[in-house]
Length: 392
Ligand SMILES: [Zn+2]
Image (tube, rainbow, N blue to C red):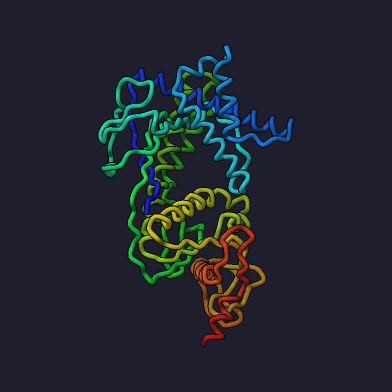
């Protein structure tokens, strides 16, 4: 089965390449923001839904106008790709997966995508349109041979590092079927707790870096606005931020791969459900562990390897329900780490009990063949329990 897989590497551009890229990023950002305004205005003023094709036609006119003639100096393919990115952002919005698209800012990460007609790849070197030398890429892991990248995305992050991401359509063999199934709960003390009692990833892992980050932020705040030293301090803050983000992503990648490899069915709660337990002091801990990114990784890896990810999109009392007898507590405050069921007396670890319930409801959902979409899950509290009792 063909699956899209992106390979990302750091590269070090020459001064000339930096100049071309800065110009390309600027033009892509301009076109994205311009098209966002066009589409929004079209809707408000004419009640019209402007499509990708509509914006592409208008871009042709825009590039002919005197005041935006400089758009012709960069790769036209990269500009069209900006329109595609915007189109995707709108689709995500219309289908309820994302907020309304927002304007791109110069201070944030910059990127430009080159479709296959705007670069050449000979298996070793990558040459972008409008450049006369290949990119100097650090191949920290090999790129699978024998593939032609479908597109290439160049990005520059807030810490001023450059990356290239090559998108391949690869043949990925599904893993051998295993009978193992698991439910995952997001914890506060640990990132992930499994229904078989394993815990992974402590957010305190980053405590040291976070101290460093706080110190760098204080130094930045003290510098005079608009000064060179302030700019330097800001870069330092950005670098620590990125370092923490990189480590977290590496950890999540390893963990999601491992869970998908080991299990045939993986059941998780969606973030909408997670949001219901969010409160002020917990917001940081929850955003820190990056649940939505983790679930996204599980989702695409499940597709690659022929596994099944069941997302539970409807509220279900996973923490408050006794897995053993189905009794539901009236309340369970967040500081309670373990509790004894008043009905059957079993003592539960809060998170493991929740993960077990997530697995049970996930299997019910999967067995009923319900579409796993918001509002579509009809599993009821206690349902797996009743089924089990009936079969005993
Ligand atoms: Zn019980």
